[in-house]
Amino acid sequence: MLILWVILFSILGSIGVIITASVLLLLKKNIQTILIPCLIAYATGTLLASAFLGLIPNALEHVSSLTVLSTVLFGIILFFILEKLVIWRHCHNTKCDVHRAAGSMILIGDAFHNLVDGIIIAAAFLISVTVGIVAGLSVIAHEIPQEVGDFGILIHSGYSKKNALLLNILSGIVTLPAAVVAYFALETVHDIIPYVMAISAASFLYISLADLSPELHHKVGISHAIRQFILMLFGVGTIILLLQFHP
Image 1 (cartoon, rainbow, N blue to C red):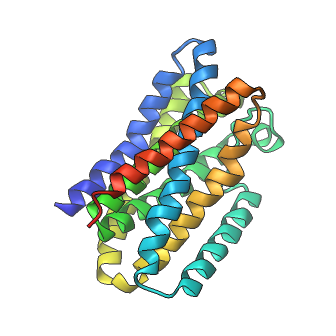
Image 2: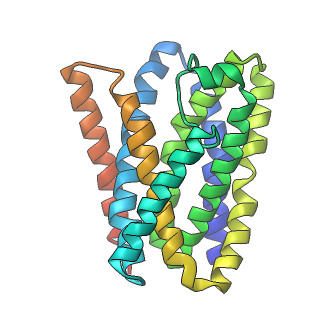
């Protein structure tokens, strides 16, 4: 039964997200301009809450606080290095130098990122269904605006809309086998799950603070700030509500 949860959220977090992102691209430009920043603010809240209230506390139940925090620190530095190598790239700006250089690198980055997402989902469900849903929801929340941005990058790089959709689906498929393999591997080597939780928390923190948060500062003004703050709180509240069901 647990493996079915893993498969469900792996599909929702990959193919489901790509389809949702492609539908969003069909909306009028002015609607996209309003909706996508709202999704980014909500995703920031879910990622931060998932890391601080879900993943890190669960890791602390099994290993020492120094071990967990050291692993989180290591993870953040690791993701910084990966981003520098253009493997972990989430920029939504189609005019940045990296994206202008090679749209194909986005597909490689997406495939690697989706592989990590699959491992995160599997490890979280091995803790409990509730933690799995929390992690899965956080993955879905931050993947939607990312995929919208990546579609724009690929099209800007010369890909047709059809090819951009197909290639994104191919890179998204990686999530499912990664999650299934991780599920059985982590079930066998159960002792490493706390470390996977800590690395997962590091990825959520890095994405929310180094990638999504700067996007929110592109819009200035009190009305934008209030809207973003409310949506971030809504994201945090969603995770808190879900964690109430965690045994």
